[in-house]
Length: 71
Image 1: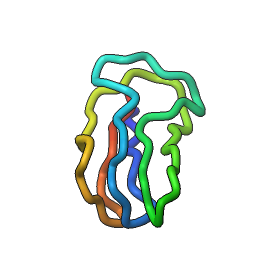
Image 2: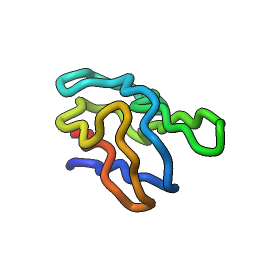
Image 3: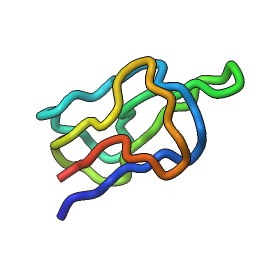
């Protein structure tokens, strides 16, 4: 079953850490967001394989926007 990781806030994508095809453990950092000069890591809740990264560095995302899909 695929897990969709969604943005919890409005932020800039500072760095994409995980890439499509990467195996990730629960709690792995997928991307780092920047909001109000703070860096916020986005973590996945379950282990799996990254099937899709929906953001790129420099993107501005809104609350609820998809960030990644983990299968």
